[in-house]
Length: 324
Ligand code: BT5
Image (cartoon, rainbow, N blue to C red; front, side, top):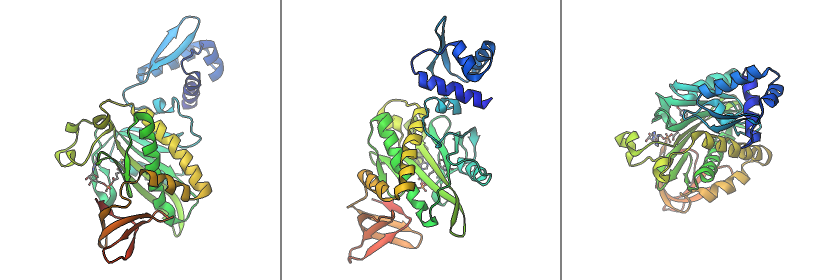
């Protein structure tokens, strides 16, 4: 059933504005024209609007408000990122589900997407506010064949992919705050959480959680977030299609990830530097072992933050909260 659905949406994707005839669709999925009509009716129930014109056929003219896995598939041209979508209405955290799926050996590139998280999490178990139908709350499962120490580089890679997607879809120019925040006008619009399953020095899977504020208004945020968080809607002034942002993230992510697997982190680092805000600035890094204050010199070829303190000592920071 879902294979047929995939085929249908793939052909509507390649058809673009043109109509697909009932005959064509029947042959494509190998069934009768009555069965085609049933599939079309199912798409309508999910919120797709399809136009049917006699002697021409069908075309999709509007996609649903909710994100559905099918809407994301419509127009998706990646090889493996986002090809397998696990969609849920309400979950505790997409990370939790992704961890379970990862240990069940689902294909690399599988994504868990939810409309709402009731206990979304940031780093160190901090809460991540994830209200219904407004944002993108998703977790991506990867199985890169790289040493454990390289896992944090995927956080930086993900940040680049998300910035590129936001630029492409909205024309806005977000900035990256090392290691895992994306900001617009100094306010956080995206957080990334990279976790892994590993044994000895062998990565079994990496799970990248992405939380992206899209259509929230200021009032949708709790008071403690109103001055530090923002959404694409607030910054751009228009509501945006979450499905097209998701597709764009998948596409940019896949390109960068393949580049990373082939050439290593260096080319990603160069792109990352183009979007980074903290470089050259005075900042405070709160790490688990203490606070380091000084000037951010940049990141190493491995993605580690270098800070020079007042006495000229250069510190290498692997993970921290940064205050600018
Ligand atoms: C992060 O942590 O920024 C990582 C957030 C990852 C969320 C995704 S959503 C899909 C997946 N499933 C999950 O359960 N998580 C991932 P951190 O750097 O620790 O920042 C957390 C802090 O950001 C909180 O303490 C708040 O101050 C702030 N915050 C919470 N919700 C926010 C939101 N929606 N927008 C902006 N800031 C928020």
